[in-house]
Amino acid sequence: MRLRHKPWAKDFIQKHSEYVLTSVPNDTTWQDIFQNDQPLYVEVGTGKGKFLDNMSVKYPHINFVGIEKFESVLVTGVQRALDTQPDNLKFIHSDVNHLLDFFQEGEVDRLFINFTDPWPKKRHEKRRLTYKTFLELYQQVLRPDGEIHMKTDNQGLFEYSIESMSQFGMKLKNISLDLHRSNIEENVMTEYEEKFSEKGERIYRLEATFPR
Ligand code: SAM
Figure 1 (tube, rainbow, N blue to C red):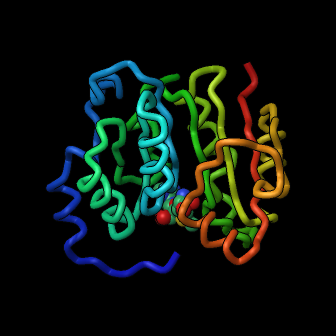
Figure 2: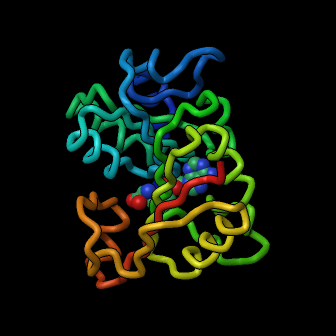
């Protein structure tokens, strides 16, 4: 992702703590934060937050949280939230490595991994968001039957993720090697998905659950 330097982004994020959190106190749950007991869906590497913004409108009875490490990207999602004022959408400014600082065990109902960076070089394997250390984090915050939904345009990352998840003992289902030409209904597109599908590139998708 090409990053445009935005020197004002840090202040902007601090100023809008109603939509973007940089920490969560130890015993605080997301039910406390949203002040309701709706299901909780999380997107890791949310980018500019377009997917969650659309999801939050389409599914008002679900709470959505997007995690993004770059302020300069996240500000777009926060600006959009300030316009639309959703009460079921928040963002976290953090690296996904710190997931356990933000969520209680078993608190998350569904986790989305959308068009995450493929890191094709073997020496960067540990940065892929489907590397085993990330799967360990997701397993802790997801409820036991909670699902991971993954989409990508990158065949290499998709094949790697299937292997990584299988080695972890995860169960995979609803695998599509060409999402936009398959029968999976109710697909909400992400920003990257729109870009890639406009170029005619195929989109890979899977759902996965952890062993019980
Ligand atoms: N999910 C969005 C979409 O589909 O349009 C954005 C995709 S963009 C290629 C991937 C995003 O994941 C980038 O904004 C990147 O900064 C973020 N990201 C990658 N690794 C991350 C990590 N370890 N922690 C937080 N964000 C991360």
